[in-house]
Length: 69
Image 1: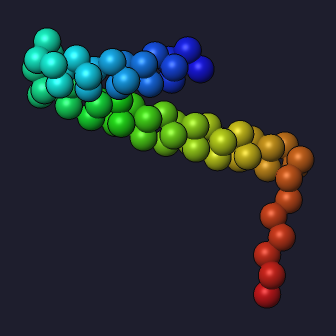
Image 2: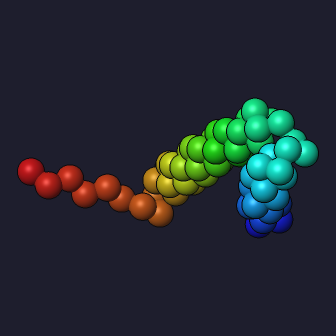
């Protein structure tokens, strides 16, 4: 949660600082792009962890799959 909060704050600060000329606009844009990429990568990582956790439960017999025919 701390990282997410920090990213939000950097976006809120980066754009106005770039607008008044204290930060190059490409730097603010690059920071926002990297932030977006990291959000997507974290979502994929969490999805993979969820799938692995479900697979472990299936191997232990805690979950059964029902297939409709």
